[in-house]
Amino acid sequence: MPSLNMKNGLQIKQGGLVHRFVANVQGQTEVQYLNQGRKDQRHSMLHLPQPAEDCLCGPWSLLQAVLILRGWPRSKVIDQQGANASLRRFWQHVHNWCSEGTTDLQMRQLVATLAPAISGDVTAQRSGKRMATLASTAIDFGQVPLVRLSSPTWSHWTTVVGWEQPGTDAQPTALLLLDPNAEAPHLSMFNARLELQSTGKTRPGPTLRYLNGGTWQVSLDSIVVVKPGNTTTSERLA
Image 1 (cartoon, rainbow, N blue to C red):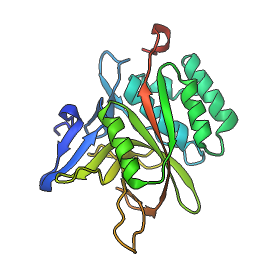
Image 2: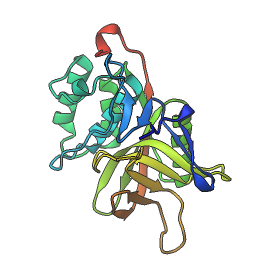
Image 3: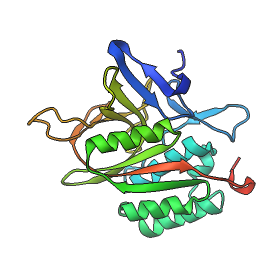
């Protein structure tokens, strides 16, 4: 099957619908990232499945951003013993402080454990329009957003891998997600859509819609813009 790899991350569908994706990802049967630690095969599976029994959607979502931005070998990133000093600090912080979920403050601390390889800004944000602007701008600048959503019964982090807009609109109308808490997408670059626009009284706010079924009315809580930093030779994991 032809690759879904797109120049500059741009894909235009029938009817003028525009999708723009983060850099360094491609779609074959599965969504993949550019693995700079592989010499025989330059791309590896990106999706990091969240185990059903844990509450670590925040850490897994952040690690997906790290794979995209740094291209580290997948096996070393998910090794909870820690393949280098940064990852050892990361997993130690996860096990000590994030076993019951990840707050904005804890996410900021997790990003700090992976410095200088990455950096990140955490912003509380409940406006769909502002969230769309922050996320789409980040993607256009080669960064990876994470968003925190909530319902009356749960709070959840997920990775944004793209944005969507009708071709005639300037404002993105949905964010395209690679959610660690959903199964890996096939023949698609994402496994969920966060629809940001209200459609009247029956849908008063954002809607989280999974491609394999399941729809939730959600509130927006915050966004983290994860940025590539500087990595020394000993921290590249290659």
